[in-house]
Amino acid sequence: MRKVFWFLVISFIGFTLTGNAIAGGKIKLIHDNTSHAAIPYIAEKKGFFKAEGIEVQRRVTAPRALIDALIGGTADIISTRGSRVGQIAARGVDVVGIALNRYGNQNMVLVPVKDKTTKSVKDLVGKTVGAQMGSGTWATWMTYLSRINLSDKSFKIRNIKTGSLPAAFERGALDAGLTWEPWGSIIVDKGLGRMVMGPKDYDEVLGYTSPVFLTTTWSYIKKKNPEGSLRFMRAHVRAMRFLNTNHDESAKLMRDFWKSQGLNFTVKKVKSNLYKFMRWDRAMITHQDIAEVQAGVEVSVKKGKLPKRIDVTKHIDISLVEKAYFTLMK
Image (cartoon, rainbow, N blue to C red; front, top):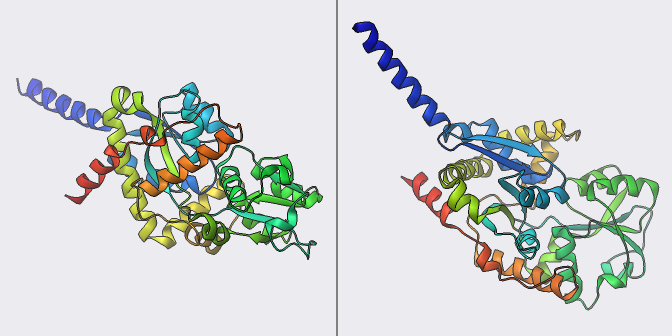
């Protein structure tokens, strides 16, 4: 009788622990190898996902593949520029931005170091500019150009992946390139290019927050995995708080991440990349973030890059991040 009793007790404990471990289920998370990886990577390495009882299958991919992964179902949640929410929604997907992954403008325009005369974007009119068309940086640049009475037709645009810009600069194939971190730093640190337009120049004209959203679908957070989505959000907020308050350890962790991606940076350089232009102090999506994404949609529709106009507010839901903050305040 005693053996039966202890068997039942042990079985119950084992069942309870197993239940807690998989309470939120498996979540497929995909991000690129930029700073978008910081919070997911830290949440994994510091055990925040595990503490919430979820198994997050984190995968790194190219920025262009993020949208297809979400649409195709190989990703449950992606980290991507807020502007992409408009792009996905315009394709008829029930996409929704549920929180900030970070914000802060890190867009820049670089020219080869041998170019000693270019001082502004207007000096590049008629020249060959490399840009990853369809990216958030591209959308921001298009909006910027419209504000200074220029357009993409003012330049010879060469569609090129941002990660390929360093090699293009080495070959002397471009007169300029639109980039973001860490690629901008790679080009400058190698002595291949110099910056003629940076985050402050964009901000003076646009006043943008340049938000990066955690993006998923309404069906996922409402029907498929609402419990896992909330647990994921709590882990996300905890990791963001850690990143915002523990600069040294966060920089060391991200140095290791970028090393795994074949990018060798010093901790000092990583720290600069993470905190010079980017902010990690809020996960809540604001009206200003939404207005910026909406402005990008309007420009893209006008330029024929999107098939129709969409109302961005219908693709934002902050209920999960509100619940996460409320729970963590207890």
